[in-house]
Length: 283
Image 1 (cartoon, one colour):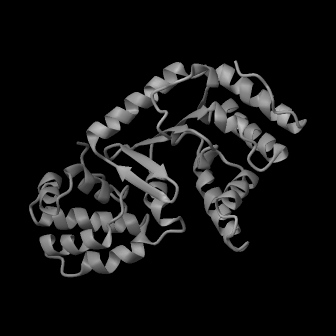
Image 2 (cartoon, helix red, strand yellow; image 1 turned 90 degrees about the vertical axis):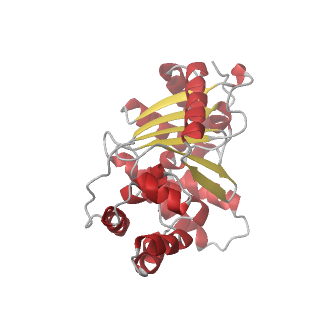
Image 3 (cartoon, helix red, strand yellow; image 1 turned 45 degrees about the vertical axis):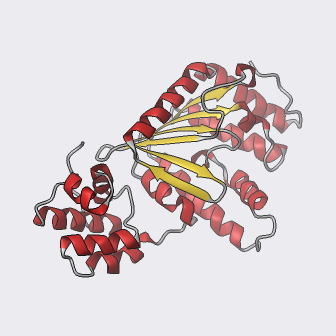
């Protein structure tokens, strides 16, 4: 397991709480594994809490205070640190995503959130919540657009995106929105910001037909996978599960179109959407 990171407590409330957890654990003379045993979690999970890639939930905070003798410190502070602009089922994943050094994602139906344009994101949220008050949608879109700024850094995180052909064929928001969305994805690929592949319909069956995959790696904590269904999501740190999903992703990479062919397909579809005719044959 990687050694604990020297956290900068001034960087964020989450980093401060992680630093305090590490300090309290070491003061108690416990390793990450030993503390994990007492809390019925893995040692790697404790490492992720200390590194700030996982949030301390209220019940766990209560147990930490009890085991480490910190009175009510973690109980009092976990709520404020845990507040998020993202939906509850995705908040922890978004926070981990922001700390990842590498992200590998297979998308089945939608352009991944980090790659979306504002108009595409708005169309997605309006489709998700057709009866929601109009005032709710702009705040959701703004939070998603804030996430996309993660890619403003020219190198980190390294993002591998495998898009099922259904992603680029479904005209979310209509032809104009879809044309701009695909052009944006292509531009990210052309400037080397993402590694892009399309998984073609012609492949038929494949290893990840059950649903999307998202894997995150960190310089200072073990890798995580994120499993999501509508309005439900979970971060997984079980090493066997993460290894299995990594193998699945690697199989998809081996079966997807090469990067050059994927880019050509997406750019051709973007042009066809621009002219109102998205029915371009796949390679």
